[in-house]
Image (cartoon, rainbow, N blue to C red; front, top):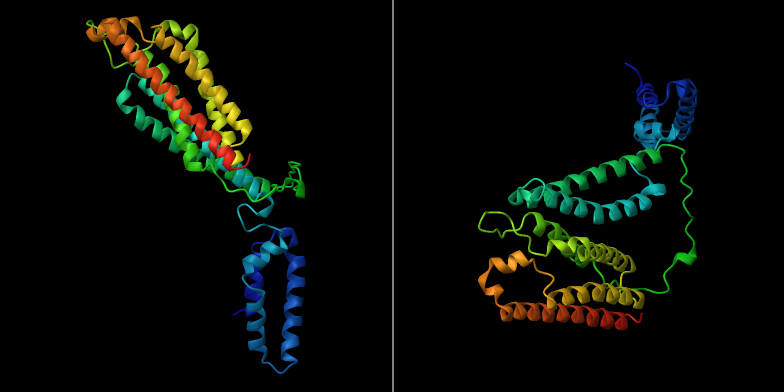
Length: 316
């Protein structure tokens, strides 16, 4: 039977590249022998000294990794913070967008609105898993190669001016983005998959189809800009006066055209108005438009006041 030292050497060298095994075997055997001699010179038994030395050296696979300069972690401290930042950013945006897009496609092109929510959720989860896997694999490869991305080094200039309490949480940001994306998805959905149909069974879009050549693309661009604003607000961690100004511009740029379209009877599809007898009455249609404008104005006013109050409270 081989000695403990022979068994330890065999276990260690098995995980070392073959060209280095002979050199490391000689070096490691000599080091172990010297450590054993030091203990036996102090009166300790040879067998006990050998066991104690090998125990002190530790797991042979860990020792082999140290000799081979091979990391034992998937992503080490060099890349961990970058990996974490990239993964958080992608997971916070991409799965939600993919889920909404796939849900809209399922409801419109696929002509299956009942399965749209399930398709959206499934697509979002699959996208999140794929992102987590491939981002992690990419950084694991970087960890084991000599590739340098030449990332800017950290400096004290990057320190915040003072301790800032986060006023914008991830939950609030995700909820706000989800609401905007749902409204964005509603615009094409109401055109292709409206729940209102005429006497022949054909679907009637809720909004005037003529708006697709004018106002609807503009409003959709504003909604996408609102998503970018929510992300910027989360990265800032609080309301600033610049964010308040950007929010006010986007709110007014969206609300004013919608209110004008409502009050001039240009928002709703004329075929939809003709479909319902109570809407054909001009007074009823005006009442609906006035109520909608009041609700829009109240919502915008609340959002503006809330952002201003939070910015003042934060001393922005």
